[in-house]
Length: 143
Image (cartoon, rainbow, N blue to C red; front, side, top):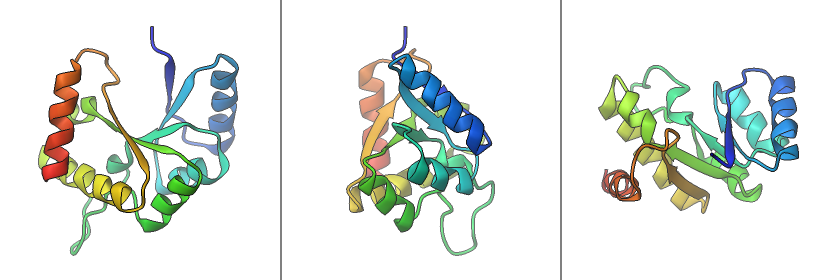
């Protein structure tokens, strides 16, 4: 049994409600982000523990830069509010465009390291060994 819950809400009120319910059950709350607006709201105004899936917010890249979901402002907020940015191994396995996803995750990891944001590599399915997650982490750091 997991000691966390992944919340996938698209509006602010229901997100706050789900967080409150999970915290009553003493579960770690992980928010799978749906938009840039909800990412900013979750970072600034909620008691969420971890945030994941920023890489899939923007469907297309910009001509001159990677649209990874995070930027320096959101990283500073995450560091200040002590939020954890999570990278899910399952996202890679289910990706239709693996190269783009790895580039976005790698960029987000670099931003998190630069602004001293806590990061976590995990497997939401619970099927993979810790050595697989360690290999995943090494791949992202070298990209």
